[in-house]
Length: 174
Image 1 (cartoon, rainbow, N blue to C red):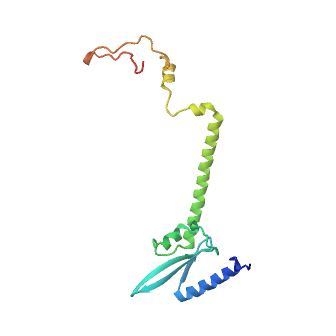
Image 2: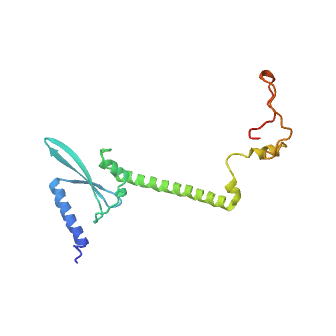
Image 3: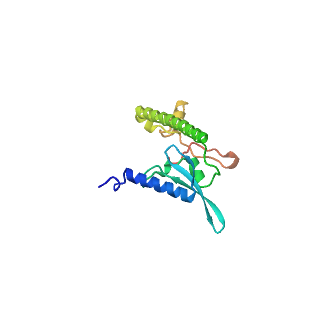
């Protein structure tokens, strides 16, 4: 089987030749290239007296399988006509620098969270039983009151009504 039949270098040459002829006939204008090697083109079509601008991306890959996330967001906006002009090299460099800075911030946060998980795991049972709400029984006991787990001594019922009401020491569930 020849390299052309397998989709090797000959297929790439045929594709480039076809693209060159097609671009010339359709008067396509190359407007830019991204860091992945994808090229972006614009051309105009006329139908019944109306001229419409068309925009397209030509993938760098020779093969059919490509990754659509390889198109930077600035170019995606241009392709969808959310911006009039294609992105400049300076704009693309600034965007790349911002994404690198964001990636380093995300890495720092993930490392901080990983260390917190390791610290919690090293604490063992205490970390598993700890809760966000305070243990009121221990708080009352530390203040010299009764232990929340023990039965109250001298249980009394509420007395009186209206202005003479006295709640007593009754607790629900006892």
